[in-house]
Image 1: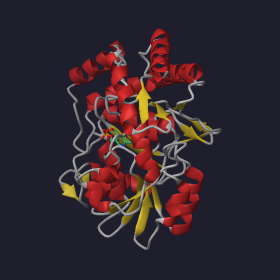
Image 2: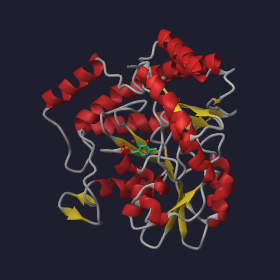
Image 3: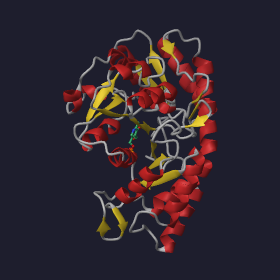
Length: 367
Ligand SMILES: Cc1ncc(COP(=O)(O)O)c(C=O)c1O
């Protein structure tokens, strides 16, 4: 089976882990040991942010960003439903209400035009997600947020290496949240990071990451234990160094797939609009005018042929049993996309021969 994603772990990561184990320093009481501090500095530089705060998952990063921005009970947060559940989960965790907005059917990202219509007196924040690694349309989102005094927290969990209008992600937001989950463009196994240019927010996040402590055993605010272990940070440093190579290989595979599939009338291929740099975390195609069953049949046959095609996301959050109570607006484009899209493997282990095999197999199944 050609997996949909695969962690790229080499001897450099293994050596880095062994070094940490031999050092005897596995963590730090306030959350930032030597490897974590090094990784934070390197990641901040990579995304051009003033601060980077490492945590133990991408979900923790999102939760930390929302809680440090004081999003709380009674507030509303605008976000897409076409994303991983964590984006909405953290909104509910801080006591606020998720307000799901429909997507732009071309990019699968939250529709900036639809955001403004959903703003109420309770709206405090907007959370654009850079789905599949393609940046959301941040300029209009920033303008709307400024007009209405809203905070912007970007979910950049899938977008390491992406950029918008030649600017790194996070530039248009109060904070950007990253994931280093095993499937991501770079990984620490599990892990996350918040980047921000806001000094006050960064300081608060550092305290909240570690039980609200400025000094040990003297909590000055409510917090969590969101420490990233030293081993993870050591892996992260190595992965970050290798990231440009991973991204180049993903891009090469994605571009080859596009070249091979461009004449398939039944497919809509992923876009990379001018001024956007895709991270190619997922290469997602749409089976045009199709019912869910037709898409699922193609998927099943691809899997029978050893291609691990997957659907992200089969069930939009507003249709999940727990989250359906937050449903407020109709989301026709979200529901349509959930029934028609599927993703093909483009990770760095996918060889040129495999790209050809994936393309030919899919074209044959579409005939
Ligand atoms: C869009 C999105 N948001 C949030 C997360 C949560 O990250 P993590 O799994 O590291 O908690 C993920 C990844 O899994 C994701 O893809």
